[in-house]
Image 1: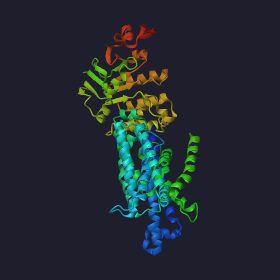
Image 2: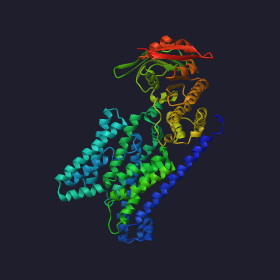
Image 3: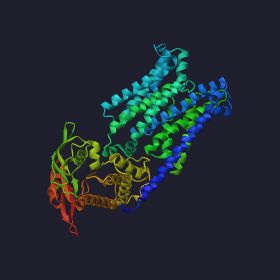
Image 4: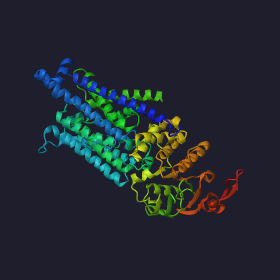
Length: 350
Length: 258
């Protein structure tokens, strides 16, 4: 074999890449189907053909049907997809830049800080001038989540921005935020405590089109930026020293990625509450299916996250007929067995 | 003309000077230089400062152009550094590791050229059979070979290899050093190789530099640079330099000096 011969390895690799592209397309199709099933399911008993008709010609529906489909189901279902995708992408990037399979939007204390912000808004933030009710909680959650991230980043930067330093600061900050949430709950009225608990369980029901648009816009802005560094991220999986050896500024890449990912995760949890599991597991599912090539892994993690949260949303409506279970709970209850099964299958194959 | 000229290279970790105006004889294209010295002598620091991973000052010319002023991305195109640590055992595929490194370091390369270079690097290291295995499913030595394939695929003008044979068995040690020498001759490049096995170094190197406490103790052709005196000064051992039945120099260390 010589350099002049037909590059047989490249041909084999091209086949692997082709297979991954196919899997990615299949994942996208599955997410689309899950979205459709999610939209078609609900308490109002809208028949499937009416849903299909209403999606393409809303005017053919009665006023009530239109409200059910376009004002209740679609915002919640697309929110599930967008939030799942945002958390999946955020988790995948965090796991790579922190070289830690346990990293997720929870690692940097983002979700805990968001809960703290929401709690404070529920208990004391009754009226902020110029901020309408539906925006008060998300804005408070987002501001706190970003403040937490900036604190972690600032501290980490002073210490050289090592992966372990970032994780340690993030976990410590998460504990601090949790403790403060408990303090707020301890001081708050029973009614407020109930609202805080309900918020932190995660709910898609409060989604509006404006919220969906915002999360989708943040996701659409972040994904191309993530993909631009896909090769550097892939190279980083071989180890920090080896990435540095090929001219990649590892610390800069880490800080830039963490900032982007924090905005993404903060925007996602601000609107729906704490749904941590997706950000941890969706990247692993994508990695098992698509491998480490970040050109596929990053969109794959987003799709896997969207698919998981869509299915969870579907399950939250169907598991206990007549009640809408908090999606955060369902995600974990349904998702964890699926994830364990995947791990076991993977282990047997390996 | 010399390919690499290190006239005065200094580097420090904080206030602690690790390299003190290191100078080597001019190195012609195609040469392999072994860096010898005890632990902490400055071998890794020398390689890292040439690779641009440590801030260094001084005068170093590669192919007639100053090397130390190059920005990281520009330096990665002409310098191939192999870190001492092995690549992480992740689910990254060997081919992908090399492909990714090549794309990240040499973004302008055409796809066909890239494919051919990766193919050739895997072939030269006898790695073709492992190309589609995951890094967490192959041995540490094999991961070290993958990392070396990353360097060879980039066809750098200067190879900086930090103990490239540390995880390899006897056959692969010889195989790898032959491949490195082959690459240096073929591309008329220079290879600086930090290595602990002195006899291996004597066999494959065109020149040897012995370091101690961040200074060059001796540098030149293997026979001239590696003597009982330099070995005693560099490693604190009493050692002999014998000649084997093939006429090659062999170092035998007898005892540690107090």
